[in-house]
Image 1 (tube, rainbow over the protein chains, first blue to last red):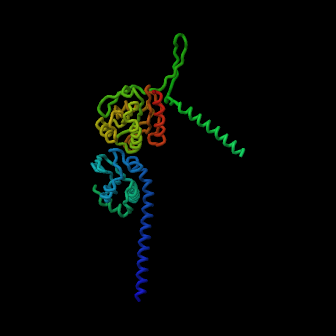
Image 2 (cartoon, helix red, strand yellow):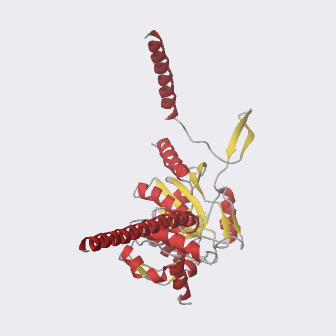
Length: 143
Length: 216
């Protein structure tokens, strides 16, 4: 009886473990897919100003390497991509007071792609931005 | 063994030929670009034909410090000119990012100057240009940002062989090409480089060095 229980528990644990593991790798694959799609969009829409390595340009365009800023603004990043940004912000300890143009042509899934690319490049480790997360963020944008 | 020796000999003679060719290449001088016309005149009773090359005409433009700059500002060295506008979302950031690399390499070297013309004569006042220059990281007067009337700037762009046009259908409202023009002390254009292309920017670095050698 005890022996059987032990076997059941071991089997259950194994099942949970393999389930989690497959979930994780599935998530990793999706993140990689989104990032690849996002890179194309980044080159077309963002790279002119923000640079091939997310380095920005002097005090004109902020770099995308401030992981702390990105993490603190995760919920509003989709709004910034879609609606642009103006007014002063502080990035890497430096104040930027320019204007970012909006990208109204980007679909929510494309915003998810490009955020996943930026969020997992240039030293950032933000994981996957799902379509659902981007849609939730966009619904809450301040207009 | 014998074929090996022959191959080696051929290879050696080929390589020496290539190296000699390269050696000759370092003497390279840059061409003078643009239209040219022959001018025939009579000197001491003899007919002489001379070639008149395309030159950058006289200009007087307001810079980021609201000071007039003229050809004289650039006369004691060579300079690199381009056309841009401060809120240009398309090619300008790439161009200025690349020109900044050249500026940083030659910063403090008065033989090389930079001249960026704004084609947005409505918005880019000297104050706007000043803020832009500071944000870009330009800290001395080696790089001038200038504005002028539409006729002046667009007329000059023709002389620099750069396409500029007001066009409401393109992002930012102005259409223009992103070329860097290398201009020598005699106001001749000696090179034109696509400022958005890394290989062309590298060519500018190389040819700028060649041009500076002419004045050593």
